[in-house]
Length: 314
Length: 276
Image 1 (cartoon, each protein chain N blue to C red):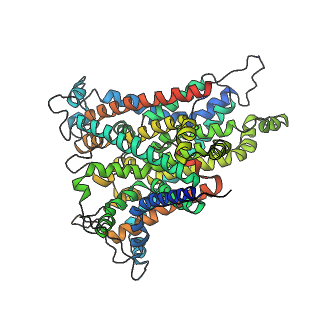
Image 2: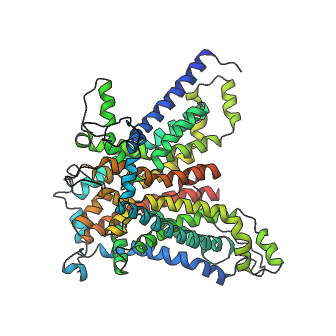
Image 3: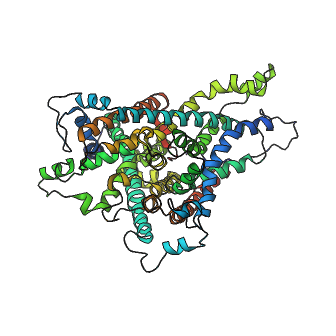
């Protein structure tokens, strides 16, 4: 990622305004972007906090004249009597945590690491073919991917069950029986490319002489991976884990495969937020969910930025 | 260097494992290679017999489907023009002016852009668009994406501009050009590859997006392809597979083409941006 902020070190000499662009022109250049970002990124951040303290709805009288309800929406989300029930916020939050752990931190990162290591050594043809499919899973539009998996998992005709049949295993209706594991595998499959590309570029930035020396000493691939590759890309691994955690936490794509169902079993917080706001029309409560999501995002973003900052200063 | 037998076997095992993982990634997509060309396609994997383009003919005969692709194009191109222009100007200012506090601005933008995701901010985005009276318009989608994609676009471009020596513009100004002329006539042509990357990245993001148009648009004649695709279901609620398959392929083509273009021109490092 090339998006870390740079700490400006201003030259001490008092050269008369040596910037290429005057402040006035600079401010003008910044205005269009500033306006757009303010209205669609910064204002929503504060507005969602405000709305979360009201009982605003999409329809009815409270749509136009919402009342201030204090923390009622938050109390409703964290209601101890049904917090862990299916279809409630607590269930969603725990489900999302498990989803992030299983599909991003374990699935995407490990598979990406394995792939990145493998494609360093395999013949170019194998490398190109593998990369093509892994990246295709990542770049194709989410709607198309959702439908592809719907067909893939179909109970009666799907490719997966046909494949299981040829090795003598019984078919399954996975979207009904194991919806959580379906979206975990789905998201691992969908996102492994990013980790693979990040790690692969990290590996290729290690001087080849390190590995050649290890080869001369008779090191196995696992030893090279464990003792040379892994320690040298530690920074990239941290970056990768934070980024894929944030993306997976915010992803809405599983909705296209499962609709959050069956019976809320795949209702991640993003999908819960959608249902509360746009199906139940409770904007106040939906806003409260949004605030909590943003706070979680904020925590990860601050960690990410502080690491980026440390790297630049060092 | 001669390979020992264990090393040779190890190499074959590595290749086999890589190929196996590649195949596992290909499996869910295989269906898409065949179904669009099969007039009797179902959810099962089947080689078309005969291969035919009749599904595509049906899609292009469906005015709603064609309109949706057109809408996707309007929204993506509109969004990308805004992102490209605004990000270029802003990134240039961040790189070349000495505005006070621009480091802080950068930091705050970066922070907000990763905190305010589409799925966390769907309620306020809907309310803002609603308050502006823009619900169910192309402009709603265009502006929302322009705002959401701009911070990342600005960082990519600012890094790009930082890597260009200032002497380009300085020599132009020594020759009597104004700063604004130096920007348009000297800097802009040099920055162009960076702008291309940002524009392609933004286009792919908007073109493939589902959630934002899904909540901001209502009527059929505004829907982009990503949302319209869900109308290819029969009255019984089962998908019309032949149409869906062909339409999905058409809808994916621009993304595939742009990806190939970028990886041919720049290597594929650039798709790693933050997804909205």
